[in-house]
Length: 365
Image 1 (tube, rainbow, N blue to C red):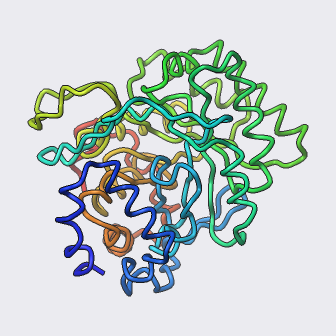
Image 2: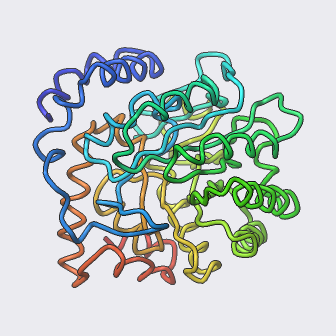
């Protein structure tokens, strides 16, 4: 697999990011995962990596983050690459084109991406149709957003929940993308509580108790973090994804694309998202499973997220720079790290360094 990816990587790098991405999706639709996954992807996952959360059996904690497969075109192909779970979306209630192109930029020197996609989506109908045709093998979540011009955000999320609940293994409410005007306002306490209370009620009315998670932004004040943690506990949602992309720009970015508007992902997001993860683990008192996302590019990165409080982790940007072989490398590295520290399972390691300082969180492993 590594040699195959190394052969095609230079050609992909010469293409605009969206063009390269579309080509990889089409190749996966045609069965390319058989050639890209390598032998490691076909091997059973070690028992130490398995967990049961929300009544679901995760074979390993390494997931594909939302954004890669927005329209549920290749969830099973991505599972065959070795992911323990795949999250499709963000999907909006109605189709929408997103923001004008160009809207995605590789920051090669910084191992990062800036995007301002704006929830480009084929719409809920297309995703529901595709999911209804797939066998229910492997864990697939659906990330829900709202349309840019919607008059009622709660109605958008509620319809997404009702229609996807029986087809998804879990659902995610995305209130944290920086590329839809006003979306992040939904994280403010009053609106956040209203939204989640309504969605929990809709879920109960649907008689399909699918796990319901919320994806939050990394750019939160301490007060906002406390509010989100308390509302999450009070409303009875099932977990948080920490975190989405950031609108901040570290001063040490060197790429010429660093000034572009949009959300920054990749290596520069690792430290702030991991510090936020530890904060949310403390603020929720370890009572809510957390999924750690942001800047994961190695087994050590994934392990740092787990010890900061994540039961599961997700990645996307690092695949652009390292290729799909990274999934197997992270899994095998996690087994070694668990063994080194005397842990028999991922669950035993979760949150064991949540009280470390931010600097310790990102340098300890």
